Each structure stands twice: as structure tokens, then as C-alpha cells.
Length: 312
Image 1 (cartoon, rainbow, N blue to C red):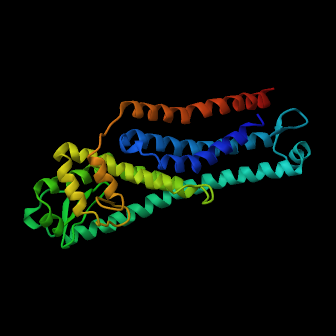
Image 2 (cartoon, helix red, strand yellow):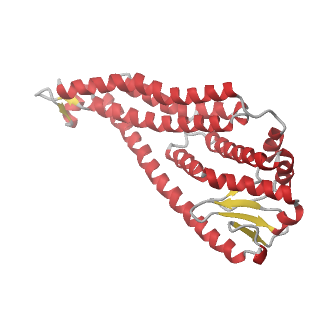
Image 3 (cartoon, rainbow, N blue to C red):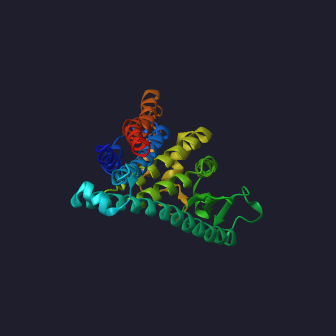
């Protein structure tokens, strides 16, 4: 019972900092981006659950038996039973856990509201500035009057794929098809929701323990998944040329751009072998282990002890 809280706390710190930093330096996720993304999600969820588990374990330690043998929440009795230094340590850790939980809920709401507000405003602008006219390629495509190649998408209920006139004039038909397929893959898979969740978790943990590696790696992985979808439509060569043309493409916050700082990595990957069943299987098994094994190993003894405290 006494080891439960430290184990949970240590696991939360490990999964929030060192583990993401280590995984972000690996290259195997480039071959199996879907499995790697599942592993990243498992790490993030396990970090949150471990933080909450540590707080619950601390709360259980504070429930010392009263005169009748039943658990009590009287601070004076808790201090008498635990001693002031240990009681202060338990209360501090429990307060930090509540802080992480509160920050997580606040981050989820804030990121979701702000992102949707920005998208709605930008969607209205691209609809007003649309230059496609009667020759619109598709109902979800909008064309902006810009000479530089630009391509991005606006997720949501009213989805948009935004291109510039420079994109349509500098790319041939297969390349335009490739870049549109890439953006539509983001929209179909709702990659924006994955990014929102990781952004919320990233902001929930204190800066001293969280790692920026997770958010950056997840952004790259969803681009790789969209690239793989586009390759199935046009092949690697048209997509590679389109990515080069749109490498400096920028997008507003809340949108997903085709270009960006990872363009070179993505282009080089198109010429490599993609997909590895053994690596993917190991990643999926690792995801299950990260979520299940520590939880069972630590939570079950704690639950047994807590039940004995209430019913003994």
C-alpha cells in the first residue's frame, strides 16, 4: 500500500518526460506511423492515469482509522497517525494531482473552444475570398488569390480544403490530386482531434516535467499517415513534387498545412520501405502493456487494501 503512490508518481513522471524524449528520437515510427501514433496515445493516457492514481493512493493514505476503526478525514488524527512531515508531503502531492486534473479539464475546454472559434472565423474568410468561381473543382475546395503555393485544410463539421492560385498554376493535375488527397485524409481521419488531445495533455503537466517531443512527433506522424493515403491515390512521385512546391506553405492556427519543417523527412521517407508487421505488432503490444500492466500491478493491491480499510 505504501509503495502505491510513489510507483504511480514515478510512472507519471517517466511517461511525461523521459519516455517521450526517447521515443521521439527513434526512426522506426516513420515505417509504421499508425502503430507509433497508438503508442504515443497510450503513453499520454497512461501518464494522466498514473498522475491521478498517485493522488488517489495519497488520499487513501490520509484516510487513517478513527477510534471506531472506520476511516477518518480529521486532519488532527491524520497528523497524529502519520506525523506532520509525512502528512504535509501527502497533502502536497494530493494537491498537485488535483492541480494536474484541473489543468487538464481547463486545457481541454480552452483548446477546443479557441480552436473552433479560430476555424469558424477563418472558414468564413476563405468562403468570402474564394476565387474558384463557377469552375470550382469540388464543393469543399476554396481557392485564394495568392501567387505562392499554399495548401491546408480546415477540419470540423463544415470542412474546407484551401488552395492558392499559385498551387493550381505551379502543379500539374496529378500533383494537385496528391495534395488534395493528403488534406482530405486529414479531414476523414479527424487528425485535428488527436492534436487537440495531445495539446491539452501537454499543457496540463507542469513545464518542468512535460516534454515538447510528444506534440512534435504526433504532428509528424499524422502527416505521414496523410502522405500514405495520398500515395495510394497518385503514387509517390506526384506527392513528392507537390510537397516540394508547398514546403513553405503556412496555415492559420487550427488548420493542417501540407508543408512545414518536416517536409524533407517526409519526402525522403517516400522512397523507403513503409510498413513493418513485426515493429507494428511490438508497438501495439507495448501500448497495451503501458496501459494494463502497471495499472494491474499497482492498482489491484491498493484497491484490496482500501476495501479492507472500509470494511474491516
